[in-house]
Image 1 (cartoon, rainbow, N blue to C red):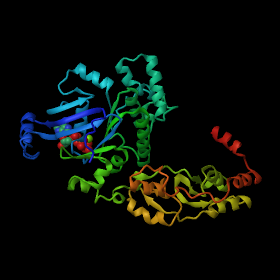
Image 2 (image 1 turned 30 degrees about the vertical axis):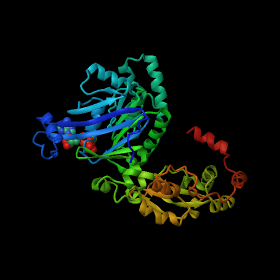
Image 3 (image 1 turned 60 degrees about the horizontal axis):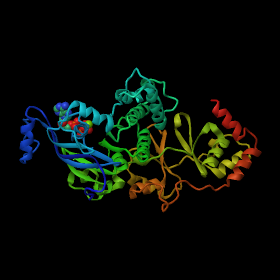
Image 4 (image 1 turned 90 degrees about the horizontal axis):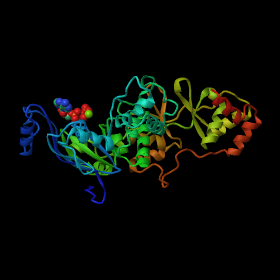
Length: 441
Ligand SMILES: Nc1ncnc2c1ncn2[C@@H]1O[C@H](COP(=O)(O)OP(=O)(O)OP(=O)(O)O)[C@@H](O)[C@H]1O
Ligand SMILES: [Mg+2]
């Protein structure tokens, strides 16, 4: 179990915090403190948070996980003073925020805590850049500096080129990037994120999670992240607090939670303490790199394999539907003989799984194939891949760049120079010409 590490700066400390909504909140708390249950005090009000105590260290990603109604949002809203606690203490970098004046609270929010919501909460008639700069405007930062700082953050979250669009012109994933940019632009030490990625498609969600970790490492933010998704909690959390019916039932590292669940509720949440049965393909899949359209033909396929140094490529048709796999030797042969139909060498039996399949079901596929496992949606569209190394790393709870695990992609079997030579000898556009034509699209 991870205890409180006194050597690290405490960003947020909650001590015996209660929140009761209803007629007689104080009385409800007194009775809860005297040992009565949530149900016993129900006539006095809803005990949304009961006796919560924890420290969040500076620079940590602290995840609060629990089923719907367990009190997560109520808890996080007390951490920035959006709601006052009914009892107990909340401090931010040592400053008690329960019961302080509105002015003092505004100052804490301005310098210390910003929030990212599930449903973006963007201003619809303002551009991406102005949305990102909004918090700075509130802070009274001048127009020029505001734009400059917002611009930097907008680029940092991958929205360069979209600065002048309105939120309605953006996809959900992009809107959430704007929400994130707005919180980051405020440049507070602490970010509160309430189900911030829950409305996103699995792969976009994964990208956002990865980016959040990157940003966290780069900017050293303290992040308190709420989710009811175990995959997400495990992926993001340095530590996880599990909530049930208003109470925090366990705080620990993902490993603590999985291997040493505090009670049956947590155990059930993590399903038999078996990662392979808890984590799903969507939770560990990665974007597909080695992929080509049928229409790109053998030359296109060969180029992708050469550039990515792989010996196989996923082939997709209209609407990104997976049609199969092509291997470098076959494709090279085609290019040499002037054959233009990639379909002739496509093998249509790659291992495919759906996003919600558990890792335990993925092993049988990975054992007998050197290819990553293809993840497809209900319409057979290729939405991601699970490289074997990722699968093993997920189970071992390791970062996937560890060197002791087997290789991700099948290694090249045909030398790169030979491929380049063949592409050149058989005519067609050169790489430079292709790059030029792609650039002008
Ligand atoms: N403003 C409110 N007034 C009365 N009851 C409330 C209020 N906000 C929340 N509650 C109740 O408090 C309990 C905890 O709600 P909360 O929104 O914190 O849960 P949650 O874990 O965030 O759930 P979800 O995953 O659905 O967002 C619920 O029983 C809810 O109905
Ligand atoms: Mg909530």
